[in-house]
Length: 142
Ligand code: NI
Image (cartoon, rainbow, N blue to C red; front, side):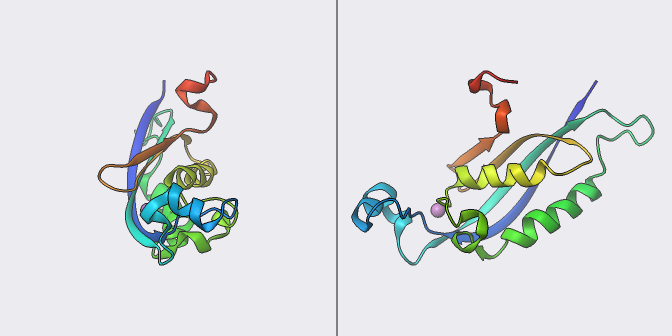
């Protein structure tokens, strides 16, 4: 018997979509205004979903205080008010929200007190991305 919990976090960061694999013209064509050399910012919303058995004494999957402390140290302190392109995790990867979702998944997979199920990242009110590691429903492995 397991239960699921989801928690949302918010941070602001800037980025620029650009790949050294293509020349300037092809970058502009591919990424459009997101390739602007001056970058632009987003207010990101991250929703992490975790699962685990409900502790018979506390009635909880895990203590949200423990999850919040982990998120503060490993997510918010690392990403809030940064230029994503300057972070080591984007040194060789385009700072798309797909790649951001993968990085946040990698981070929360190390949270020891519950099992990470999914990372959902909202970049704008119209764009959101999900990453669930090897558990994505369309790749056939659960
Ligand atoms: Ni953007």
